[in-house]
Amino acid sequence: MARFSILPAVCLLFATAIQAADKPNILVFLVDDMGLMDSSLPFLTDGKGTPKIHPLNELYRTPNMEDLASRGMRFETFYANSVCSPTRVSIMTGQSSARHHTTQWIRSENNNRGPQGPPEWNWEGITDKHQTLPALLKEDGYQTIYVGKAHFGPIGFHGEFPNNFGFDINIGGCSWGQPGSYYGTDGFGWTKGNKRRAVPHLEKYHGKDIYLTEALTLEMNSAIKQVVDQDKPFFAYMAYYGLHSPFMPNKRYAANYANASIPEKAKAFATMIESMDTSVGEILKNLETLGVADNTLVLFLGDNGSDAPLGEPHAIASSAPLRGKKATHYEGGMRVPFIAAWAKPDPANAAQKKLPITAGAITTEMGTIHDIFPTILDLVDVPYEQPIDGDNLAPLLTGGRIDGKRDFLMHFPHTHRSSYFTVYRLGDWKLIYHYNKPKGERCELFNLAEDPTEADNLAKTHPEVLGRMIKSMAQELEDAGAQYPVAKKDPSVELKPVAP
Image 1 (cartoon, rainbow, N blue to C red):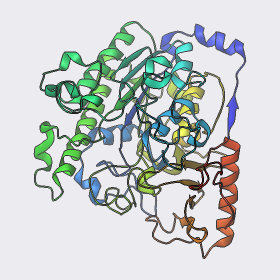
Image 2 (image 1 turned 90 degrees about the horizontal axis):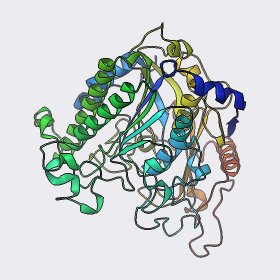
Image 3 (image 1 turned 135 degrees about the vertical axis):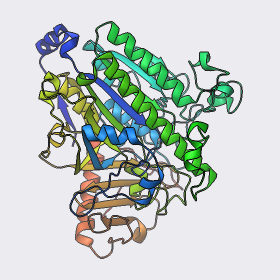
Image 4 (image 1 turned 120 degrees about the vertical axis):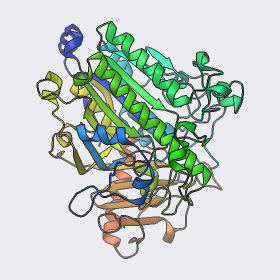
């Protein structure tokens, strides 16, 4: 359900007068294509709510994620869209993909709606009509820093570069999401590799023996230091290109996986994870060195499910024991790691008194990408006017619950590994509605509490639950102003959800 927050104008005037020391810094780590199981830190729990280690957790090495989680709270169930651009726009706007209409990843050069996709889907991504998280924070006195992958809009449009919609600094962010190369010796794609996807703004590292993740880390640490030296609060957004393909190993970590019984691309993927984790540790250490760790809120998450080169897209493999991977409608395609923590817990800090995150905790309550926007803005008392689809996570982060209905709508009216579907999660139930399948095959219904691997489709045996879920999903879609796929034979006909 969409909601608004409008504070009186006088509050905004008072807010701008508050000194930088009274404003908490915000640091977001967004990892491309990182699923729930791409970490040594376990996010899944047993029946008692205790974190449970699975084989993929034993494969990967992320000690800095483990350290960050010890300072705050992680979520067992945190949902993103199944592909990246919709998630990235949702974080910036607080809106579901059904509402902001960027329902597919954005191809930079031309519209990729697909043969039955909505003709008017928002291929432009972030536009000048959107109220964005960085723009609101910038108006409140924050210095806003963007480093890494953007993928918010096509070439030549408003969303192409992050500095067009609220970021003061943009290093590495442009229209595309896949890097031309991860190697400085390749100029990150400018001199070798995929030149059409070369990473911008990193010329000083060209020809050097440095990995892309490491170069971006140096840039983020430098940018944060500049802002801190100016005694201003910062909103820093570290958007890693890794773990996106091409799967190019970081030789610094290759020996750690040399004897693993997995394909070579999967070994490369593992080094990319460890590179990212090392970066997280170096940036957190920089905050400590600069003396601002106790006043910095850290949010860590992935943008869609794992794309680890292990197994088939809809199998239990790359996200085991979850089913599916990136771009699918199963849990492995949509669930991502999420950690919220203060970089240095300090009960005496004013911002931490307002949001005392439970350290070392894991919650089985659901969180979503729509929640990041209000969580940050409510913490710093910045108003927003557009309708949003998320809730402030503060009650969960402090050990409580969020009142009212908690659901998740993921709308994908395009073609990919899974095509033309909507996912709706409410309570223990998950509905997958397929728009272009025959009537008797349109629905998959799972009780995730009893069937976390999505093996038993209950659509035919639980007609009452199915009907209720379809009705609720259809209402949420209409409330959001969703766009629908069109009929193959008659593009003027929208394929809306219908009762079974």
